[in-house]
Image 1: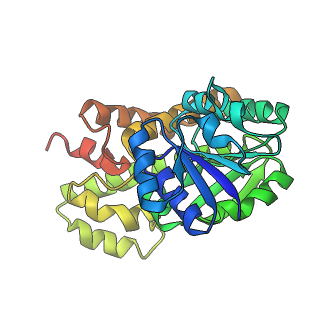
Image 2: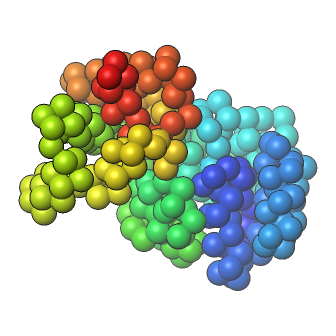
Length: 290
């Protein structure tokens, strides 16, 4: 069993750290809002730390799951960050959805300090984290990945190394591009069915048995038809992710007209007060004038 620090007790990190503790690892936690770390300790045991540096001391692995590039830089390379406390040989696993550039930046700093680094964003949402069934796409050195794989398997249903540092983040961008287009398509389909006077549930039941089937359709159409948008990944978070995607596309030359358009549709949802609604709330935008 390993000594592990988990940094970031959000809706994803909290249950992920719990799976590690249940698997028998020695886990300590840090969160910027200390009450969340204290709540985790009350539920699972272990200990809460006051800084990332304190959490990282004498650990085999430091796992990070925070909000964005700047959050990652702060907890890893800040004045009281992981690099100030971790020993040589520690492996940093970053589950933040961030840019490929910051992954390469953090990997270079880790290497300079004799540590390993993996960019390992996840897909599967809060339910996937709670059920230990996340999809994890990883970038980094193969030998580091092989050593860290048993730890990540504590909360993964699918785990794959995609290539060198940054490849995990680039693969997560592919994931978000797919989701953006799928949710908009599903929203338009449901909106059309409603305008056409069809039973939306019956329509989904039929077409979900054919080529139109998707995870989004299977798991979100009922709540969408009910006008309920509190079942997953928030619009604010999706816009953060899509900004990373669109910025990367400007560097690599990828043409993403649909993704750019859906990003603006999510901006409309934010303007409607739906920043914390889940991504399926694109239907609310289409129905707003009804």
